[in-house]
Amino acid sequence: MSGPAQKYVYTALGQLKEDTVANVFGVVTFFKLPYRSKGTDFCSVVTILDQSNVKLKCTFFSGNQDALPRIYKIGDIVRFHRIKIQRFNDELQGISSSGFSALVFEGTVDAPLIPRTASKSYNFTTEDQKTVETLRNWQLGLQNFTSSRRNLSNVQPGQYFDLICQLVGKAEIDKASYLLKVWDGTRCSTLQWKVYVEDYALEGDRDSITRLQDLAIDVLVYDNHVELAKSLKIGSCIVIHNVHAKWHNTGGENQGHDTYLEFHLHGGTCYGRGISVPPEDDSDVKELQKVLDAVGIVSDVTTPHIQLSQMSPPFDALKRCQQLFVTVLPAHQQWQITPLNNIAKSKAPQKFRIRARLKSFQPHHLYQSVKLYCTKCNSLLHAPDEQSLTKIFEDRSNGSPITNTTNTFWYRSEVWNTGNLDNRAVAIHFVKKYDDLQNPENSLIMVEGASFKELCKLSSHFNTIIPVKSKEENLELDLSAPFLIQGKKWLYGCIKCSNIKSLEELKSLLLETGWDAMEMAKALGVELLTHLFVMNFILEDETGSLKAYLWRESERFFQIPPSEILMDSDLQEKLHMIMSVLCPSTKQIGEYPWMDCCIRSYNSNVGGKEQICYEVFDTLLSVPDLDTIK
Image (cartoon, rainbow, N blue to C red; front, side, top):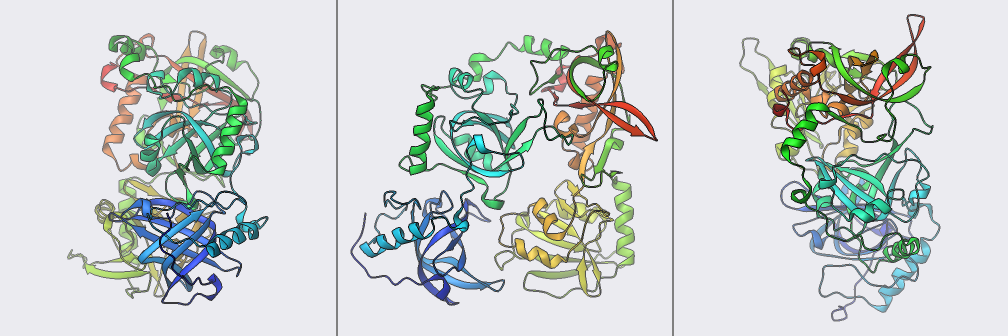
């Protein structure tokens, strides 16, 4: 409701001055949904524009998420009262100050002037109404406000887009990923990859999900988005911001009748990633509901789902099933099983479904299976082990004296002596965010002179580490060592394909949430190497045997991150146990478990000799309790 009339003065964005408090109107050109910042506050980032053609980036903090601007799409109109204007990185920016308040309106012309706000009392005059209507008409057709929303019928592979849709099903995949089944009333022109989920784990009306199987898509959401995804109500209209549509097969194919499209909401908040639930009176929600009603397939998607306890099979039956089959196919269950001898006689390229046992595998020393792969130049390198890393950092600390200990506006430097016999010094450069240092669990540090063991200790306390060295009083990267360390992930860059830039480029990320490895690599010109397991499998059925490689989809097959396994003894043990289940050395091959696999054939030229090779794809291990399979 509106409070007593009070006259406010509004400043055009082009006339804002540093170190002042102002009231402004603007149109949203970019925004991030509220997210948890360091400490207990929530943070919201929004960029606005007005007729002065000047943009203003604003960062707001509040312990109450509802007090932050309720923005749902580019083109929304905002009114901010009492924002403080300050200079950061040579640009004016807005932050919340005492008494800050916000009203948000739809940017659609002729939409109701209903403000979104947590305030119980606010002023909204006839003059304010005219300002909103003027901004609505002004932004029409301007490129700055072009919506990134897409209907599923218009989505193309490789796109990042916003999707307004209805939720019809959901399921937990693991602690870091969650499945949302959604539809928008249109049909995707490309075949979609369907995530394999047991019926008892899927929440939603089964009849509705079945009727919508050709219209609904599976969206996998990750990391910080999982908690919100779990809380979403079946049947609600939601907006998924920055969905990534990508080809499912990783073999470089871009078309074909067996090519499927995946949909992902990656972790982090870069590019405005997130999920929002717009109000029911939102014009886009009303329009979506009209489309869904016109399709008329789903009568009621809100029927309570069947609980796990109502559908779980008896444990003994489940155990017997696991003893026979230890893999699952997330797609292609409709394919016929092809005998291995028929595959060996077939021309390439083709795709098959097989049922076979793992007769043997290479390498036997599983740590040797971890490789580093460059998707740009196709280089395949050995991942350095602990002994190699110890030598790399020992040589670096001996050959690169610390010369840069000067504080800058974006990092603070500290140097200490290790006290060892070598009298070695270690420097840590603490990178600031929002012009301030962060708690260790949120911090990025640049480290020079440290040993491998010291870096391991630091990685258990600090969020992100970049090993650096000094050169002519400047800090620089050296890709002979890991480019980035995040916990147990030690990430490397391709020396051949990287175009290293100055570490000063990190300043462009100082207002981003967290420290995203991909974004940091992009800023610094590093072509990241991908960790892979590379193995040779000898598969055997009743008709013969076949050699197949597992590599491009190896992480998905094992559901173990190869980027962490060299630093995690538990993951190493898990991989050993998995391989002992698939290929038990103490048993006859007739007692080995069966594997349902998808394999693809392709032509290869090795040493000038043409040959047909085979690769495992679209196959997942299903060994939920290794101790039950002996």
